[in-house]
Amino acid sequence: MPDRNGNEKLLEEIFLAQRELDDRLADLLDLEPRDLVPLLSKEVEKALKLTAGDESTLRLTLLAEVLGELEGPEVVGLLIRILGTADAGARREAGEALEALAYDRFKEVAVGVERHLAQAKKGDAALSELPYLLVGIPEPGVVKLLGLFLQHEDSDAVAAAIEALTEIGDPSAARLLQPLAGDKRTVEIEDASGISERVTVGVLASEALELLSKAGPNNG
Image 1 (tube, one colour):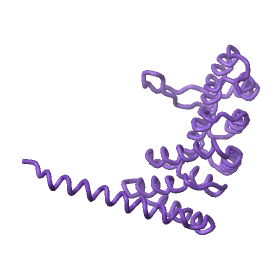
Image 2: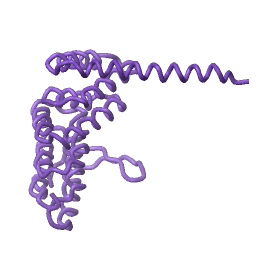
Image 3: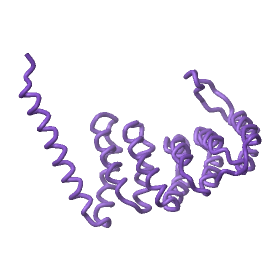
């Protein structure tokens, strides 16, 4: 027979642990930003050095959750750092936090993205994540910001930005894509059936230009 009382006790212990965690997080968020943000920055750096695994996931995900309650340029930068990790759960939490922040403080996030683009090297995973995040932000500056991704040396970032601009469907993006029509760099993409293939950036840009030529008026 199942130990019903034991299971109920276990569940109550989980409820209690969650309440205690919520209380501790509230205490943490009561700290002054000048004290809290440097602390979080230090912990993010420590977590990023951990070998990928449960401990890394736990720390980065929780740190992204806490950062999502804050604002400011350093917060944006830390969330982008987490967005560039190999940990899917942490990336998801950081992406949701960044997207929410961008709805309220787009300029702050845009400046942080520009700063990251200026210093990020080829292979930085955040570069190919950010365009998909930006596509859902209803701000006229998004197209211009995505245009900066098209100029980066990372071909995956360029491909992500092309896809994002195609999804937005703003015909004004055509002028940003035209210089890429002959680009011979290759990227791996996945079709609707899940099959991967390598195509050139030029092919992606040309396909996007064709779709944008059929789009309606600027939907901003």
